Image (cartoon, rainbow, N blue to C red; front, side, top):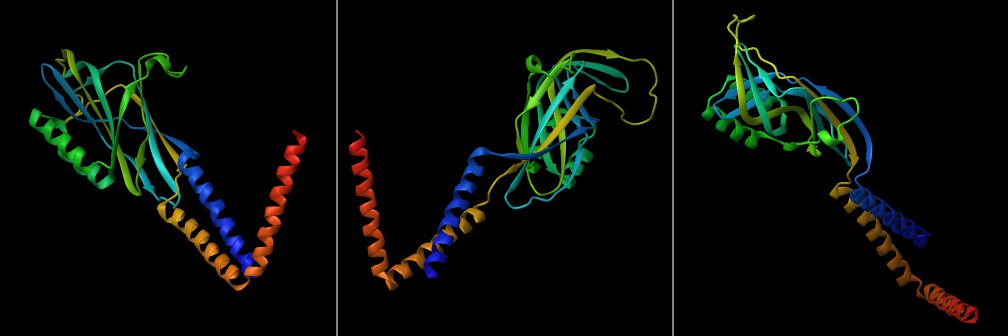
Length: 265
């Protein structure tokens, strides 16, 4: 009975450890969902050379991370024209850098509340420091126009790498950076009071669920193997004669197999 229990624990622990190791290496995706991001302009900095556009944050909701799973996000973005439309002018710029930031919702709300409207150069420096300090993760969007999907026939197409998400109330925001190409001013009055602007962008966020075993799960599999090995050692200590006979039969079987191979040759 002790030997049977020991072998069950030892083999089950080894099998579980091999499966967990496979999942760790393979990055197996089990589920994914896509969400459209509302790209509303929150803050803009325009100088004679540089343009920086901060979008409002989009809530992802509450992510409850189950043990053994990890969440990742990937962003796809299309720009028909590289312009940002402000209340009294139209800014044409060339994009050099697009960054997707993942933050806790409360941090994203504080950042977009402080850095809103027309920004100065000092505001941009403070914004970059705040994002670097409060971010959970970030990913750069790279130009992928040459391999864009068929339904994106026009404009520039950008894709990002995967960035890992954490548990909690999360939000994402996008930061555009580029250099100025031209400004077109409007003489008409504002249609509404306050800061109102937009950027012609379609953005899609894909959230991917992957199997990612934790260190605790790997240790529990090792615990099963260790307990099985200890019980098997105790059974060998109690009944050494049975195991001597088993080893003798094993050696005989090995010799028989080697002789069979020699006769076939």
